[in-house]
Length: 532
Image 1 (cartoon, rainbow, N blue to C red):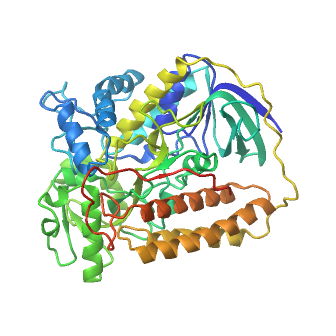
Image 2 (image 1 turned 180 degrees about the horizontal axis):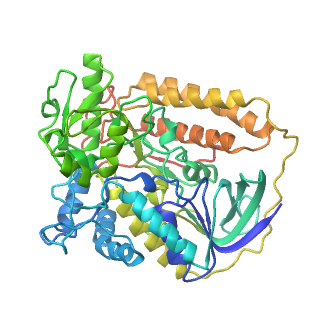
């Protein structure tokens, strides 16, 4: 087995991973491992932009209060303030790297700030409606120019390697990980002084999601198997408005469309959000998703509609060029007719317990971006705070790592043990388990939950995890099996966390406990070593 040695290992090529790598490259050699093509990440598909209190009439205090309110007051105010106040400086970093945000036509020096649900002001910097794509392409260019960074695609992490697992004396430390080189079909090890988990989210745990296929919760699952605390996994954000069309796989209609005046209507043409919240179609995502879910169920409809036909085609083409073109491709002219939409799993507020500087409970391991739970999002993420968190926390993590003594691990990582594993001739089992797991999560652990549904889901998921473990041990490792193993682990974490929270708060709504508990809300935390 090949073992590669680097000063720093970054797992993931989204915003958090690339920014961590660029910052760390000033201090040593960096390996960035990307599971598929480097451009494939949740960050790349972010449409709305980055929330930042950068307007002179805005303030950090107002942004913090909006974050706390939308987070159902489970957000950590100290964490929110630290991240939000660092925003303007990190935006300057992006611009210095070559990222260009939209400016107002009438005032070329002023940012064209968007407004999204839950924000009391316009504070979302954007690059058209493909902010994430433009950022990632610029950052990948900067990475390609950097002699201190090696980026390898189709390199999928299998598990972290710790000195505790190797039964070395002293405090356990992460020294790298095992990886599957999907191009060669071989397993290799990467050894490093520090490892940064920036593996993104886990939307593929659900049957319907706005996330790309790579979002299988790999970092969260690996950290859990290594015994790290996992926090607040019950808070899964369902984006209210994904395009409803059989051929439009995972296409998101940005919340910014509602920010520019789009209204949600039912199949009878009635605006319905006012019946659920005084903020109407600009209510936070959890409120809007539940309202749409209820509207569809009570009326027996397959979707609702987003209507922005009162805005001109000229405005829509300029502000939402990608969304406008995609809707036309599927037969909808958003300047003339409402767009059919449904909710879909979008963002995980929970994850690996980590500080603003990415520190985890395991020495040598840092986590940032959607894979981490810093406490910023609480029970519900404020729109466009995710890219802000990824930007700030990856910078803080790199700063913290750079100040630590860099002692390269000398302990050998053992060669991968194949034992009696053979090539699989039962791929249909993987596909069946994949579909059963995701359907179970959608049906029983979705927007509205009950105790019975959660109990039923946990029984099925535990049975599936046993089958998957047996399959994992019996056959040679493939990317499909690794992803299935990871989404099953994440599914179990979501259900167990949901069962621990006996109230409805933010994104977690249960018919058995429809009210918020009084007093200061607490986090859910799972810390065990589940195997698998």
